[in-house]
Length: 506
Image 1 (cartoon, helix red, strand yellow):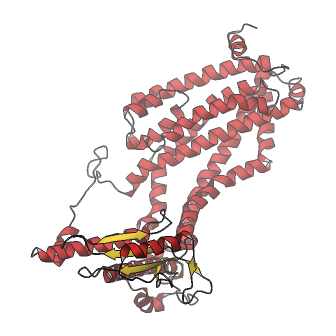
Image 2 (tube, helix red, strand yellow; image 1 turned 90 degrees about the vertical axis):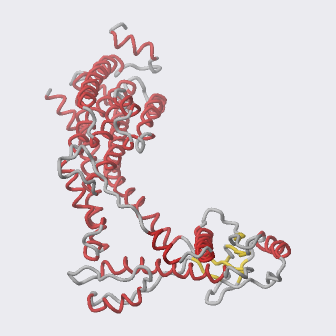
């Protein structure tokens, strides 16, 4: 056993000193930050102002005025949202942010009210560039009252990707869209929006215009039918009260809260980390074995230790590397979450908001649930299963190219838990989740996803015993193959040869 531990320490230090080890530790939190912040940054900074022209050919519906007023209100809400974000890290008062009329948000009014409560170096808020800006029709595209003739000229103009000069812009800008508003075909029919745009992916402007026209038409219909539009709006705004209750919780505590939602979906994040950890350390083990085999280092090691001691030492050493990586990933993700909330000032501005309560709820969840112990248990068992397979197959290969032919199949086999990572929390005790739980290669990932949903004890104990038994069988077969193949040269063994080695027939 002493020789196996020495091999394990050598394996751990050999991997811990590499750049790939530290890159692997930094990779997951970095990807988490990128995945959460880059889409937000691109939505704010990466999308340019969309310039559009509006042709209002309506008479009864006042379509143009309705659309422009709706776009203006939407832009006011957007500016107010950005102001609240700007305000967070500059808030100096111990009191929460005073309320404001959200129906008509005015960040200018709010800034004057809270100016004495800001830090001395807060400065002044600069509103973002508008998301949509109306521009006049360019020369040659004037509206002459004839739809078909106008759209013929418009089609040619937009096909050529021509640009127009806008007041306040030093360079010409592209015309994102042209909206033509027409009255309905019959009296009382809703207005028609003909939306010309070469960019069909970004439909926010189209949807906002359609929403404005639809709302206005409904109000006019209510008035025509003798119904007060304001009364109807108040009635339509009424929603039934929903109280989510969970019968599995203790008496008096059945109400579902933020922690319960985290309890349902947090295992999915742990499943992804589990998959990534098992896959990474298994590949690390394979690379180490192939490198030592191709450099003839294995022959030197086997002159001092037995093949079984070498195999056990490698398994323990690389497993320790995986444990360190997994703990670093979980710890860094928690620190990043807390740091992002602290730097944004969300807790000071809105102490009762979901964002400010998230770290406490997450800490409570990790402390009250079996997520962390289950993660450690299933990581070890899953690692032993897959590393046993990879170690057995890798010992028969003389270079990494040969080994990749085998590991590609294993990698494809491991993709199924990732495909079901979001389905299982919706039905954690359903037939699909239960079936996958009893398939040993998938047990660590599926049961990790089910652990917070209170699966039946027979599933927990039964699948755990089956997984342990499968690990024993895999490691036993791995030891027999490793003992025979580790010093073998020539062509890689076939599956039939591997089977003969396992049963002891050479």
